[in-house]
Amino acid sequence: MNNLPNSQLNKDHDDEINLQELFGALYQGKWVILSFTAFISIIGVIYSLSLPNLYQAQASLAPVDSKSGISGSLGGLGGIAGLAGVSIPRIGDEGNSLKALKKLKSLSFFEFNVMPYIFLPDLMALDYWDYQSNTLVYDESIYKKDTNAWVRGYSYPKKQIPTAQESYKVFLKHFNIIEDNKTGFLVLNVKHQSPYIAKQWAELLINQVNVFYRKKDKSEAEKAVGYLNQQITVTSLSEVKEAIAELLQEETKRLTLIEANESYVFEYIDPPALMERKSEPSRAIICIIFSMFGAMLSTLFVLIRHYAFSKKIS
Image 1 (spheres, rainbow, N blue to C red):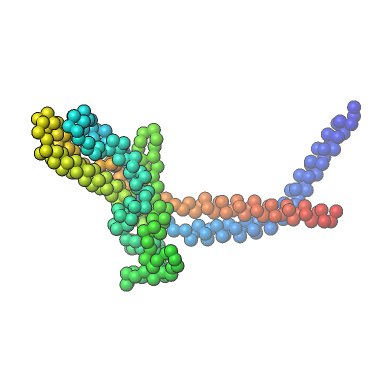
Image 2 (cartoon, rainbow, N blue to C red):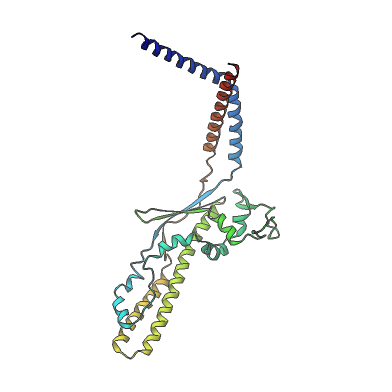
């Protein structure tokens, strides 16, 4: 009956000894822990200071309702088009905004709608932004500003002047799109060392995606008008001519709305602003992470060394 309390007492005593040994090992190795933690912390400070400041331009957007306005004006004419034997392209039946989200991140959109309107060294050869003079300084081992020449070293498949595919991969790191599935609103973020470039690129993306789909739908509507004009001349049935005339009237309205609507796919809720404060990096957090990592690593080293040395002695 008395064995159980004695066993429990011995167990508690062993635990106390183990804890004493653990804290004793940590105390003996305190200078190793402090020195290594300080060393890693200094590396963290140097690393954080080497990172450039990034400024984020943020635009809040709302998709333009494609079911009202342009495409909605033809909602009741499906039966008339069928009566006339005419099949015309429909604009925005599924909503251009859904397709635009994919288009914004596509290589083709970057190559033909973004790359021609940006200064490529701002993306591929930037060294730093001088905020005092608001000038961009380029890496001279990549691009010579004085001669406007690319001088970087390269190997296949890269070329001296960055290609659209290479530049596209870098550009994707500068922006992202966040969609609120409940409201349908979008937030487009663009980051760059220069807040002016970040704002410029954010506006460029929105403007170009609106222009792209406006041109696309205008071309389809003009083809539909041309086709209807051709059909109205070859038919002799008055009922069919009336149906085609009504379709022509609606297509003309559609063309007018396309030309008048600048915010064709997305409209601004809050346009991008010129930011005064950087968005990243958070140097304090980086330094804290490095310090914690150094403390954990040095503590682990001290304990492993202590217990490994103790086993060798025993």
